Length: 313
Image (cartoon, rainbow, N blue to C red; front, top):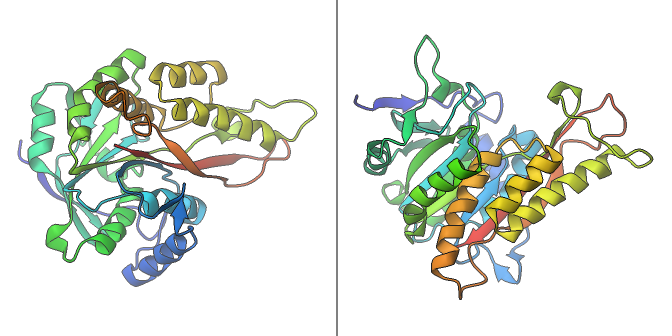
């Protein structure tokens, strides 16, 4: 089946600004609020080709996402893998787009048809559901929310649109640890390529009755408990061991919505780390920002947590 045309920017005008000039000014402002140096390095951080960034509406998570995107090094990148969770339908395994382009208010980003075909030909990937009168590719926000930031950073990095990298959108489903490792091993050679970058789409703790997740420690503010469980997850991610991250989530049941894209990416980075064991400063995430939509004080409140991180490969 041939790829379709252009996926519409379906959340523009609601989840984020749909007018290009206004959106550009907004993103410029978010990026300007990030320091010019992180971890004793000027930005972007050389070799930081993998990031974790949130995917909520920009008024909530846009400032946090800017920390990841300002660290992201696109200088030699020819393709950007975008891994996000499925919110629109239950998915096992991983799924690929059938669209040829993804629209943004700034312009279209081109899907890397050759790499997408290679992945599809492995027989390990399904296609993002577009049947039965629903188009889950268009309805899904976890991939789309990163595209304006990717386009903005491309415009800051390259001299013309013809130089912009292609994108490889991948929805990552509800996989167990061994399945995440298998997809990580499959994707590791693609991530190893110095011309590839990886964007991992994830919010962190969703706390509140509407999320069916309300653990708390009696006698202390609920928002401090949320911060603690988020930092437990972040510490497991920073440690670089996929098994530790899986075990942490099993213990805390933290509602990290992009846990499976994170898990697949951690598994891939572990493969690369074993190949270059002497390069101890690479292949592990470093968190640079943590924010929440609000500070929960009582059981009637709710919040969503956001975090940004980068890894050098």
